[in-house]
Amino acid sequence: MLVYMTNYKDFKVMNKKRIIFLDRDGVINKDHGYVSKIEEFEFIDGVFDACKYFNSLGYEIIVVTNQSGIGRGYYTQNDFEKLTTYMLQKFEENGVKVLKVYFCPHSPEVDCSCRKPNTGMIEEACKDFEIDLNQSWLIGDKISDIETAINANIKNHILITKEKDKTSKASSIANSLLDTINIIRN
Image (cartoon, rainbow, N blue to C red; front, side):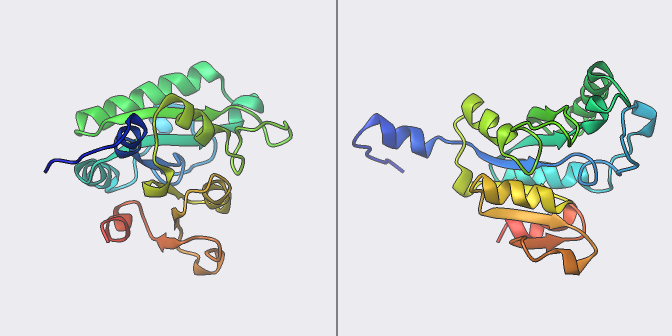
């Protein structure tokens, strides 16, 4: 199919990335509380299959995660980076490419722009990549994830929860990342 574009701006809009923004703890791995060591990191069933499916639909994966354990002194940024390297290697081994991981190292008491529900990580991703937020999704397991999507004008967002009463802000709900496939493909 040949598409005629009148100017370069049209070309840039057509080539913007469609992103699946994923929270980490509770979406990618089981949230045991301040997970910082490889031996504590347990992937949730179906994560690789879901992400491969997203990739097959033309979406790229970006992880956005609050890591207040760094700011609270429970673990170091180096510990987080080692664990992130391990996580990315496992994604790659399973045929999934993660575009980038953004994290907020601050405790909730710090007034920063990056801690969800603030939009700093999304804004940074948009500076790093040409992203079409209208065609992107944010998937998280906390209301703060959904509030981040709303605050960043990401209209497509999914709350992973089994507690249906906590879903008033979410555009969709699912029991797991694998269950989100049915929402995103429609």
